[in-house]
Amino acid sequence: MVSKSGFCDLGFAKLDIDRVKRRGFAEAVYCPGKTEEHLKKICGEFIKNKQDLLLTRLDKKTFSLLKKTVPRLQYHPLARIGYLIKERRIAKKGLVAVVSAGTSDIPVAEEAALVAQLLGSRVEKLYDVGVAGVHRVMSKIDMLRQADVIIVVAGMEGALASLVSGMVRCPVIAVPTSCGYGANFGGLSSLLTMLNSCSPGVVVVNIDNGFGAGYFANLINI
Image (cartoon, rainbow, N blue to C red; front, side, top):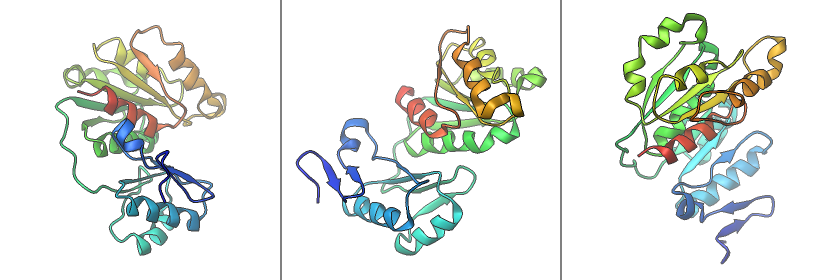
């Protein structure tokens, strides 16, 4: 039952039913650490309250189990997102460009892209254009300059965000990933590079946080 404060208390979870009124989209569910039974109850309560479903970091096995009780639930295996959207949103006029440095960064980029799309943004993707072959991203500079916000996803040293930001006028959201060898420290080196960017207009989300990047890009997008 939804309280006067706008949330539903399940005992193990307090679902923010009013978030859609404040932020424009329902509360997303981070799946790791939650039991299958908890996820079933959370999904059921959101559906009961006419909320959209967005389940992040959802593995395929758990999706298959949830699908039995939520038949219309859809799944994007690369982004690891389960979703059930009641009505297709009217697409915004602006463009979100999602750029990945390497192929190994694509799962995080796909998470960002899908979240932005589900929230109503028009998205174009540009993958495997890291700084080791700068001519690859330079060949798409016209497309990047048409974007209203750009998400740059990069592991290793994470330099691509600064490079892209230096060539465009729109905001850049930098997403460090945990891809890389030992001195990458699970994404810490990429995170620090992005935080220390000398190019103005770059904001940084947490390591591997494609969801946060896609959500923020949609807020910026016109």
